Amino acid sequence: MEEQISNTETECQFMEHDSTVVFKKIKLHEAVAEGSLDFDEWISLISETEKTYPDNIEKICLAYDSFLSKFPLCYGYWRKYINHKIRLCTVDKVVEAFERAVLSATYSVDMWIDYCNFGRMVFEDPSDVQSFKKLVEIWEEEMESHSNPSMTTSVEPMLDNEVSICYSQDDISCIIKDLLDPSIGSARFKALQKYISIGEQSFQKASQLNEKICYFETRIKRSYFHVKPLDVSQLENWHHYLDFAELHGDFDWAVKLYERCLIPCANYPEFWIRYTEFVESKGGREIAHYAVDRATQIFLKRVSVIHLFNARFRERIRDEFNARAAFLQCDTESDSDFVENVVMRSNMEKRLGNFIAASTIYNEAIEKAAAKEKWHILPTLYVNFSRLKHMTTDSEDAARDILIDGIKQVPYCKLLIEELIKFGITHRGSSHLNVIDAIVANAISPRPGVSQGFSATEREQISKQYLEVKFSL
Image (tube, rainbow, N blue to C red; front, side):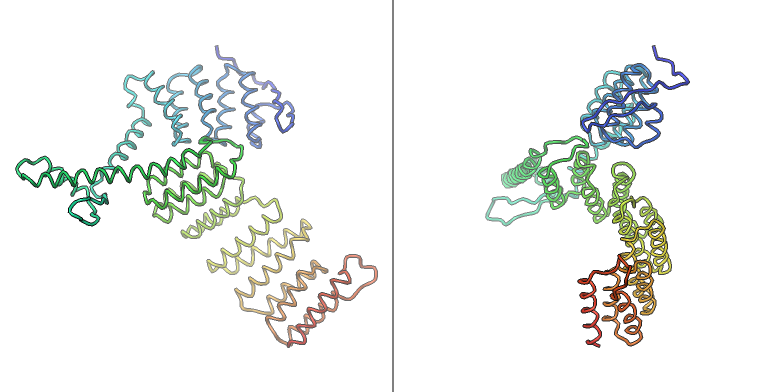
């Protein structure tokens, strides 16, 4: 009998993990709402929920739904979840769970087998299930693609020293018709030779292709999803396998192989990126959009590199709104990610011709970094901002003044001083030289009581570099 849900949630103790992290008692709803658990923590939460509430389908669903929304390719946990549904729910709820499972893990053969077996046991006519109809449609499409009249078969018939001949399906149909027509007499023998030759060549090519496929297939050690990283040889095998599929020229086969690959390799941005670029290059924009959406919204939503790729992808297809939105999804907690995000956002606006917006991005970033006292990233922002300003306005004074502002913010920064000197080399002129001269002299002059100034070695290096500039003018 289903356990009643009390108003006050019973607290559950999380299991201790291999990582030696011991979790405090926390309510199930709070754990789910927080949403910051890693894979092992989710597994412990599910295990503890099953022990604490073995017959409470609402709490079991809460744990599994939350977990599977973050890790939708985990066939084993879909299977466990569905077993709970079979035990505690009606058939329609089980079908609903299966439908979600095959939608999330469409290329999981085991998932489809389980669903088909369930349908055979429960329904008089399993074809009434919507997903089964879809599966049949897919099979029919596959069969049709293999018998498409537009396809051609290239063979090398060994008769009368003929050179290689390319037979279309229509040609093959005519050969079969001649073979079955007793009225053509001796011509039937020639038709038979052609038919045998076509069969032999087709078999030979199929065997060669199968041999190459088996080479890659036998090296796949893990075809299912897991958070544990794949070893280098597995990743390389998938890359080589995908290279082979792309070169083979069968787009549908390549797409299916990519989808298979993205089950064990779902946590690797490079596979999502190459999949998107491949299908986009072949005119499959809808498939590309679907791949990018899954990567950014489900599997890699906390990985900055995929959001940066998404921004570039959206810009390339002239989807400026979503390109800007993609940058906002990037993790900018680390200083390097913050700077990279600023540079890429500003460069995109520059490419789009939005020069004021490009400059605004740098101004806001500099203000934010200064407010947080991130003095070590300010020089890089100022240097890039100066170069952007010169490129977009062609104003040497404006570009120079940005560097000077940076030196005022971070007085003893060798990077900014050297950039200002390089600016003097690039843009020769007495007006620049007079300004730079005073700033460099002030920077390299030792000051009593100033502990953060340049060292004697740094002062000598800067002085030498600047003198070389002056004497070269």
